[in-house]
Amino acid sequence: MQLVDRYQQAIGDLLYKVRTTQRENIEKCADIFMETILGGGKIYLSGICHGIEMDIIRRGGGPVFYKKYDKDTTELKKGDVVVVSSVSGRTKPVVDFAYDCVQKGIKVIALTSMEYATQVDPVHESGKKLYEFATFTLDNCAPAAEAMLDVEGIEAKFGAASGFGSDFIMWSITASLVEKMLKAGYVPGILKSANYADGMQYNKEIIDVHYEKYGY
Image 1 (tube, rainbow, N blue to C red):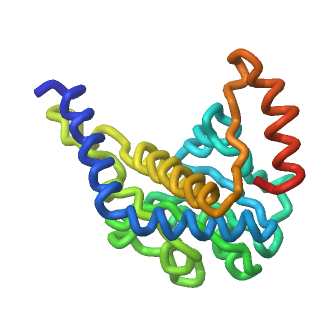
Image 2: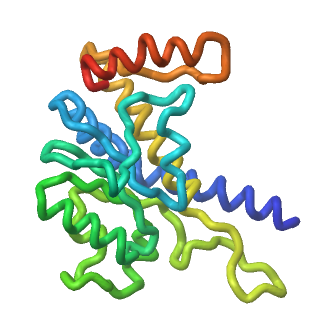
């Protein structure tokens, strides 16, 4: 089997594992997000697996209520939620930030690999890894050390897993959240593509105005 076929099969297996092991967690996280939004809080996405958060912030077909966390400009408040990511669960800047948030009463949703995190030692002075203190944790199902495939002639394994797993989880949470909100009588603002037809005007005049008024 060619490497491309092995890679595609591995990704299919990864997403299947996420579907079969994280469904309950996805629904619970959607509930947390809904409670946050309807309570007047905001949902901020910090760096997720080297930039995956940008696949869902201000995207056509995506909700307006996700905001990018910026350490220089974002002022987190009690009632807000911040989504953070460390595949190993011990990335020091991420763990430091998440730990500080929890101490201040900010809810922290963590995306991590439980297989990876349970095989490494913590680096935070608390002696804890991300999943051990986060408000809620989702497993992106990446293998320990991230990569999926052994390739003859290469010492390191090939093919990172956490980005696909985390992106799949975030969009799955969003699908559940949108459905829950609609059933409860709240219509979330969903953006159109800014580069198609009246997308930019629609987003500015309808969706952004709706968000400023209702917070979703």
